[in-house]
Each structure stands twice: as C-alpha cells, then as structure tokens.
Length: 311
Image (tube, rainbow, N blue to C red):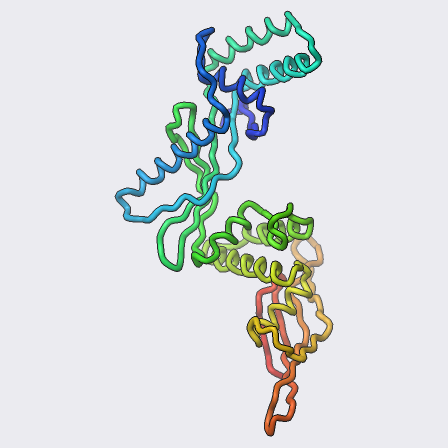
C-alpha cells in the first residue's frame, strides 16, 4: 500500500469516529444524518458475509460465519492531519474554550481531505468455516473495502482442518483469549504459551501445521483442566492420560525428575530439544499381587510424545 497511508484501529474516541463519518459520507455543507460507528461496522460485516456466500454459491461448500476480529481503518495522510485537529478541538471543548483559528484550519483541511483521491480503506478480519460433519476447514482472512462496501482485496491469513468439536477452542487460540480462566484476561503464562506455540508455525509446512495446531488446542484443554501451563505439570498430565485416560481413580504413580535435553542452534544459542523421565505405576498382577510398571518417556520441546519404552 502507498506510504502515505497509516493504519488506525477503530478504538478512537466516539467523538472523532462520528466526525470521521461526517467527512467520509458527506460533501460540502449538505446535512447527512449521522450513522453510528457500530452500525457502519455491522454493515461492513454483513457485506463480507454476503460476498463469501455469493462466491461459494456454485461450489456447494457449506459456509458458516464464526466471528470478526478487530476492524482496521487505513486513512490517507490528509485524514490523519484532520483527525489531529479534531482531537485538539475536542480537548479545547472539554475545557470550555473555542479557537477561531483552529476552526478555520479544520475547514481548510476538511476540504483537502474531501478532494483527496486516495480513499479510506476498511479491513475486516473474518473467521469462518467451510464444510460440514466432524471435520471443518477454518479460515481467517482479511477483506478490504472502501465506503461503497465492495470487496476489492482478500488476504488469506490461515486455513486449518480441525475436528468440529474444537471450534470454540480454536477461536480462543486465534484471538489469544484466556483458556484457564476464560472469564478473565489472559495471564502472562498464557500469553507466553501462545507466543511459543504460534512462533513454531513459521518453520512448519502446511502438512505439519494442522496437526501441530490440533496438538496446541489439546494442550490448552489439558491446561484448563489442571489449571496450569507449567511444562512439568503438562507432561505429567499427558502421561497419566496416555496410560489411564481421564479416570480420577488413584493410580499410585511415580515420576522421576524431568530432564531437559539441550543443543546449540545455528544462532549459537542453547535450546531445549526434548524432555525425558521415568514413569512408574502399580497395578494388580498375578494372584492380585501389586505389580510395578516402568516406562522411559520422551517428549519433544513442544510436549509431543516421541517415545514410551517399557523397562
């Protein structure tokens, strides 16, 4: 996009948002009824959903709108200057002051903005699914449009095949919401978790990404169940589930110390390559006598099982 543009998130003060709408939707001094930012945003969302539906009509692909992310507005520099003047006017009005020179500047820049050939662009981040049944393809895409709401560009950010039952979890993952205590803001541990697992995707092929994201969602489920994202706790809980399922029965388990195996990477940094430990549990053997079962366990740096060898 031209360098004269900048990106603003739709979190401007309501005052500025309404003034921007007057500028975008009106010309000269003609009165045009104001449309609320919420209403205009909803119309953009409706336009995106209508566009996707029409494009897929002949493909026989069931489409389901899931959510919209935070909207973006891309404005020409002339609009940026006008925004700053409106903000100054807003601050003065809160102090009960009026600046005649400022009013003239606003009118001058308003005329410049109205005659700017660069258009205000709106970008909507839409999450939706295609398909039906037990497996769905989830999409995250950016839809670009101008004030006429005609879609003029689409950028596909991500697509992934997942079991349908992970729809809610995938949205939590996508928007990086809290998953241990969903009604609260994400903790720093959860933020670190997202950063670690999402950064890993850059080095994976498309064929590797889908299973990896599913693995991440399963870890999030597990972390929510045990109320922890600690590596050792996740490793222990995964191992227990592997051998015993999610039973709450007493299992008489013993975990050895968890070893971090490391190596030096290409940037001469020491990184963890795997985790190893011994896992033991007791079960009734011959003649109902307790028998101890021992396993050597190995997980990779993203807590995926590599080996479970009976000793």
